[in-house]
Amino acid sequence: MSLTTADQTWAVEAACSSSDPDALFVRGAAQRQVRQVCFSCPVRLNCLADALDSETTFGVWGGLTERERRALLRRYPKVTDWYERLTKGEDQIAVDLRNGRVPRLGDR
Image 1 (cartoon, rainbow, N blue to C red):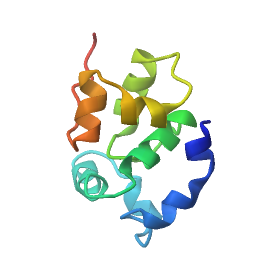
Image 2 (spheres, rainbow, N blue to C red):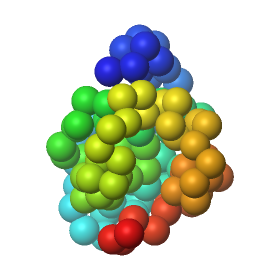
Image 3 (cartoon, rainbow, N blue to C red):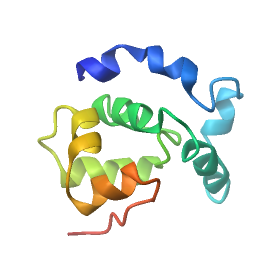
Image 4 (cartoon, helix red, strand yellow):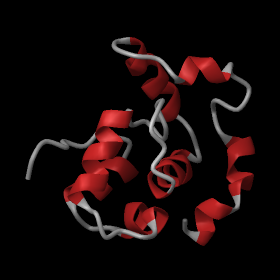
């Protein structure tokens, strides 16, 4: 886990911090609604990095579903600091995430 995500003080600024936590653990079309909250969140990349660093299995975190996060982890198995990767990566996936777009995560 990176130092950036080890300190979770960012979580108090999350758009979902006052929401029912169960609302983040939904399936199907309901994930799109959760994603809208995520993509308006000021700490979205911190949240996503934390979920990727800890390999969180369930729920929508940082705007990505568990399936999308698994795809990122498979694509980049050697990443040890996801916050650094998401905020400074120059590939299209990192750029899309920084710009509030869901990246295309199909096979390479």
